[in-house]
Each structure stands twice: as C-alpha cells, then as structure tokens.
Length: 202
Image (cartoon, rainbow, N blue to C red; front, side, top):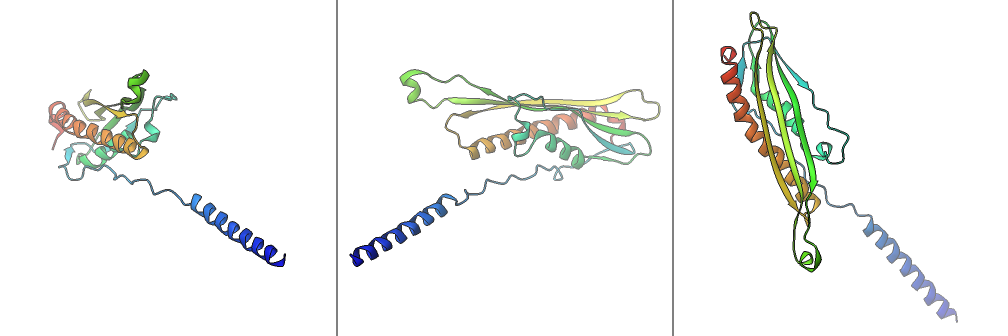
C-alpha cells in the first residue's frame, strides 16, 4: 500500500513537471517579424532650387474607412514622400520657399471574388487587391515677381495577393508596393520640376 502511494505521488509530480514544461512551450514567443529598411534617396543627385527654404506640407488624412490600410503598412507612402523631399530637394536662394505638398498618399484594400464550389477547393485565388496612389505638388511661394510656379506628379500602382499568403508575405507585398510607387514617382517629379520650375533650378 505504501509503495502504491509512493508510486502515485511520483506519477503526479512527473505529470506536473510535464504540464509546466508544456505551458512554457506554449508561451514561447513567435519569431520576430521582418524589419524593413527606411526608403531614402540620398544616392540620387540633389535638385537645388533658388529659394531660401523648404517646407513639407502634408494635406493627406487617411479616411476612417476599413478599406484604407495606410496605418498597417510597414513603410508608409507618406514617410517615403517626406524622405524624398528631405533627400532630393535642396535650396540656395535668398527669398521664397518651396512647399512640398502631399495631396494624396493612399493605399486601399479590395476583396476579390473567389472561385466557388468544388473547383474553389482546388483553386488558389487572388484574394485582395491593393491600390496605392500618390499626388504631390512642389509649389514656390514668396518669390519676387512670380505669381505662380509649381510642378506636380501623380503615380498609381496596384498589387494582388493570393488567399493563402502569410502575414509576412502580405507585409512584403505592401513594402514592395511602396518601393515601386516611389521608383515611378522620382523620375516623374524630377522631370516636372525641371520643366515647370526651370528658371529656379540651380
């Protein structure tokens, strides 16, 4: 009888140890999410304008709408545009200011139709479409003898994502979308500045 009680006690202790070990395993934190680099443009030649300063004006406020995902992006279009202005636009004049005005920097998510029925079980559909769009003006203000001088650029791109995409794949897609938009934006805005603000480019 005493042996039975001792054996039972050992079994209970072993079970408790296993339970604690299992609990510890359940609480192991998941692998760290990938980190994304800041998008910068210092590798590109600066565009110097004959004004006394640069001001970044952000007129874009994401709508309170579930389709807008700007605040979920690992690197937002707004931050990338700000970096572009900081890295590429320089000034060496004595008066006036160049205003870099962000009018749009939106990214929206749209659910796509899925294949139904038995065929759908064996089909991997594109489940979401992400539409990104930017619109920016570079406007000169306070320049003597100039009433209006501005350049502008607008770019849009989209990317779809399959229904079996992981969270990491989704965020990679969002980052790549931001990167591609900025690759399109850079030459378009640079060309517009050189065309419409040619008299002020140094």
